[in-house]
View 1 (tube, rainbow, N blue to C red):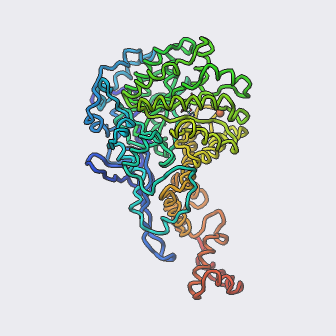
View 2: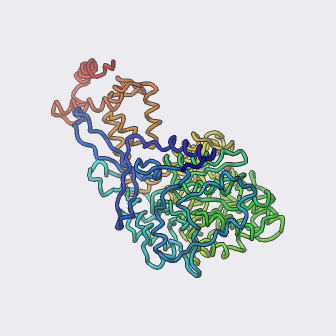
View 3: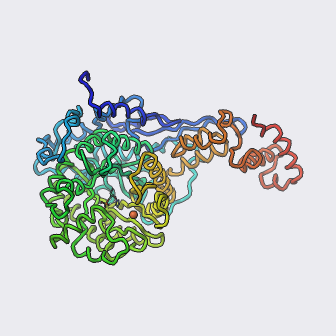
Length: 625
Ligand code: IRN
Ligand code: FE2
């Protein structure tokens, strides 16, 4: 690497340091599978011992699902210009059903502008793109339906179990039974269960054969609830390196998949950089790029331009495509009386095309042709909800539900081709109308995974739509939605920045985990129990480390009690030393133990004596300085 670096490469190399710090209190571990190249990364949160005051026992580490990829692994050198190691390459090649092809995509005009500096960057791990051999079908659904367990399926089985077998402590496993609305979550996920769910169409494992860098993950309602983060420049560009940094940032905080919604300049190159550096599946909306190719004039779109765009992106390694094939000509008039009409970008492009030509949506009429492309690379469908409601007033209307029925019809066509499929859902829906969406989706779409945008449960809080939507996301996740598409605080207002991405992801991690708790996923409560114990025992660092955002928790605590000594203090600044309920509870327990009483009798033992004991103790224990 002695050649002079382009400005972009320099920028990319600097970036890598800022987002690759290990997550505080955690270490990367790898759980081995049945073959030496199958090692499932997880994050182990290492805890301190309980202070002697509380019994002094060892607290076992807590293992959590880890989306952050090699970026938080100190053993893997990161160079964004080189891309990530191709983890799945051998698995893909040894199946023997795909072959390298001359890159068709480049012949289709990658975009109108090409920048020699961008073209100079070659990803070494990247050879020619692969595609299925003639007559072959390389989808995970196709293998599953033939009874084959792929290494990808074994990988996700291990990953979903979050190493629960290592948990022995009864208090950590204490868990309320769930209410799971007809889902069938087994106590332990096996590779065969993964295979059967994929074969049945109830889960998808998005993994394009041209994205060997990805760490397999699964989307389905009998698995942990996943979240998607959207990134992508618009005309107001943040630049390629900026987009890659957003990706690394989004997965650091827990994004399970990332959608690149780039439009504007260098769309092909931006995507190449994102995919080569992404350990999570990447989704796109190909109609956006097709629209760029016709200079933004929707009526000039053709099936051929769209088809070439699909192939171009499939060759790059996009793992799932949002395709708005359910926006039928006859549904468009149903949106006329809506308060906010059509709010989906892809939906409005297709509605415009349908009206301009007075013809049926070409995505619908060419749907089987699209399936042929999907199965040659294993790209999964994310059938777009182009007619989703854009406000509370339009929720669950005829246009939305008509489209959902068509998406059900298309799901059956996709399954005929063994193409993995999920269904996109709304939008804006008040709480009392959410359940109807989930029930109808399961019924119409044969239980194919639902992937919803929120839903936002009210329209009155611009600036806080990560919250209005996380409320709906938690509900619909509980009812059975498999993946939640995040909404950031900038929704409806502008492009999200770094902080907005983090805030959006946090809101959605909360919604997804709350849903998993409510559904009674085995072991979902382990982390809650460990954190609660740390909180009760005033193990402040452990409490921060077990949280979704250790850095923020630490910052907030430091704001009022910055000293190291305070990380051992038996109170926080919220109630102060004298009013800490947890401290008082502990004092009651200690008093009871000393006097051979149970907690209730201790309380009854006389307020006078109790208060004197507190006062005496307070004089020694509560002194801070
Ligand atoms: C998810 C569920 N419904 C819509 N989405 C996401 O919204 C979709 O996956 C994409 O990331 C984004 C924009 O889609 P439209 O506006 O083109 O439909
Ligand atoms: Fe909206």
